[in-house]
Every structure is written in C-alpha cells, then in structure tokens.
Length: 397
Image 1 (tube, one colour):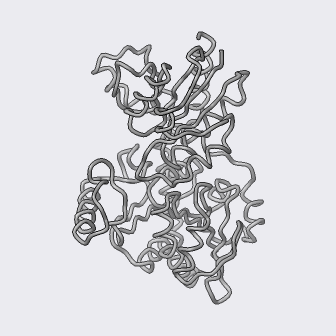
Image 2: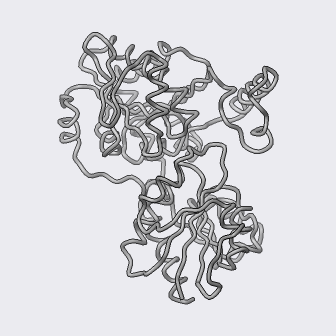
Image 3: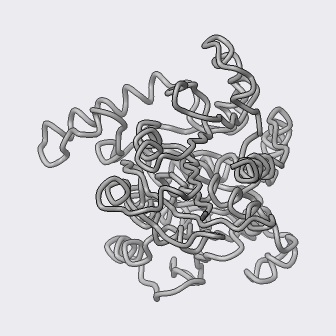
C-alpha cells in the first residue's frame, strides 16, 4: 500500500508561506510518502506554481484539478490524504471524493464540516466559529501561523550586507515587487522610479529588490525594458538608475536580505507577516493607479477588462473594496490596529518616495513599528504540529 499526500494550493504565497514549511517538516520524519501537488484555479496565481512546487521537498509530481478529476488513475488500495492550504474548499471536497481519501484543511472557517476530516487553525481566535457550529474539538487543532515557519535565516546581517557591498552604517531598503504577474509587471516601473527618487534624496542609502522564486524572469525583464530600464538575464543583477546608482535584484537568501534591511517596502501579501517575523520595519504601499488590472474574487473576477465599461466597473469595485477594508496588511488585520503603515490610494513614485524617506529619517517611527510587532503571535512550530498529525494519520491507516 502506497501512502500518498495530495497537496492543494493555488498561489505563490500559499506555496512559500504554508506548503513549503510543512513539506520541510515532513521530510525530516521517518515517513515513506509520495507527495503530489495539485494546483487550484486562482485569479492571483502566477502560472508557475507547478514549476516551483517541483523544487519543494518530497514532491514527485504535479497535477491540475482537471487532471485529477478526468483520466487520473490511482490504486484504490492506496492510503490517500488530501491536504489543502487555501483556495476554495469546494476543490478539496471534489478531489477527496474522487480519490476516496481523507481531507485535512488548513483554514479559519468550518465549511464543508460534514466532509472535512480534520482542521488546522492558524489562531485561537477562530475556535469560536467551530464551537458555535457544534464541531467536536477532536476534529480541529490550533497549530499557529505557518507563515512564521516559512521564514528561514541562514546568514547574519553583516555577511548579507558585505555580499551586497553595503556598509553597516548605510540604510538598506528592500523593495518587494510581489510574486504574481499582475503585481510585478505593473509595479516594477513604479517602484524602480520610487527607488531612484529615494537614492537621489538620501546619501548612504542602498536599494535591493528580493525577487520571489515564482516570478517569471522574462515577464519581469520585458516590463523593465518597456519602462526604459535595461538589465541582463539572471540573478543577481544590477539595474542602472543613472548617476552611478544601482538597484540590486537578488533571488537567493531573500529573508536574510530583508532581515539585514533598515526598511522593507511591500505590496499587501504573505510577505507582510514574514517581514514582521524578522523584526524589520515594514511599510505597505498599494498604488491604485491601475486598479482595473487588479484581479477580483468570485463573480466580479469574471468581468472582462477588454472594454472601457468592464475596466470602469472593475475600477469602481476595487475602490469600493478598498474603502470598506479597515486594514489590508496581515500584521494589522491580525492585531486589529495599525502596526504597519498602510498607503492605499492613487500615488506617484515621488509620493511613495516621500513615505519611504520620512520613515528612514525617523528612528522613532521605525522603532514604533518594531514595538508593534510584539502584539503579534510570531511563535514558530505550526509546521511541526501539522507534520505530527499527518504522520499519526498514516501510522493508523
């Protein structure tokens, strides 16, 4: 009998923030298991999830949901476990029924409770939802936030700065372009121009852009060239900003680079909480200049951007969603207060540079962000708890 784990996930953040730490924890166990990654449909997907999943520990094969449901052959005598991280639970339901396996779900809501065999909860605050629905406490466990476990440090800050050629006294700014095509294609020009402005205004300052592994380099290079920035293929690379100043793009030891930074600038996403776990001050910038290009969930996501009317409707919806959300950055959403400064509006690169330079010039403001992180539960160990439960399942099967 073969032991199979079918990992369900649908975006770069889920792969790096949830799937990777769990598979890393499982790889350290004495468990012979076959892991198959199943990519779920998602408007935020990068298109490279399956490619990146192949490099994760234990993964032997990647499939789409369609491939699992149609024409996929498997031995009914196998012990199958569907382990879902994010995405619509409906996909976990149909995949687990198709494979006749157990279904474990990492999430916050007791949906499909008659069919989910076990829930992993990221925070104790979600327990009330399960209690109100009358779900047995034997059917769920508070494991903690897997995103914290996804942050791995290898080098110390001085070593990282030496590798980047940055003095220990210099201010180092990490700018995260995002991991989804719509993010880095539309944001790279904006953040490059912002970085140039910051470098012009501040002496003893360097800018680095840690690039996510799910980024399609060809798309990124194409977007940079359209904006007038020339650079060679491969990482690390330096993008010439003129006047002898450069923005360094790297794709290794990204967390170490962020840890060694004075400030991190990022779009909303998984990386916001990862940066918080490193203790590095973060500012979240979400330019809404091209709001009509931001993917939407559910039925609004089906609105076409090919017509002026469709773009106008999507733009209005994005601004409506933005107005009704008190916080977007994960540290703020989890704490209920603004730990991380959020800037969500139509802005110019110069306006963004104002925000960055203001923070870099105020140690008091940077310390306030660091102090705010103390309100968050950034304890590690969630991946180990998930791995324990998975191992116990196979031992009993």
